[in-house]
Length: 114
Image (tube, rainbow, N blue to C red; front, side):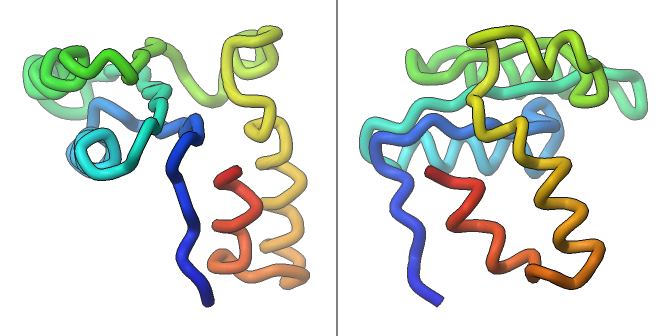
């Protein structure tokens, strides 16, 4: 499997205020040339919201980071014209392909990152 080149791409990170999402976003912003990040998170109270707010404040210092407060299950948000990268619309179809064993999760990466 070859590496995926993320330079000059727009990447959507769901759960951007969580531990993994925030750290992934920060690392990509620090290490990838001309990357743009869209962070999506509902900032729910599953655990201390102030921790999530702190992480988002750190990410807001990057000009290439845009935060959208919302839930990935909100169809109006997901399908709002021009709000999220168009590739997001393929996720349901690709999820079904994985479920039906037509493609593996690792084969999805080059498809999802363009």
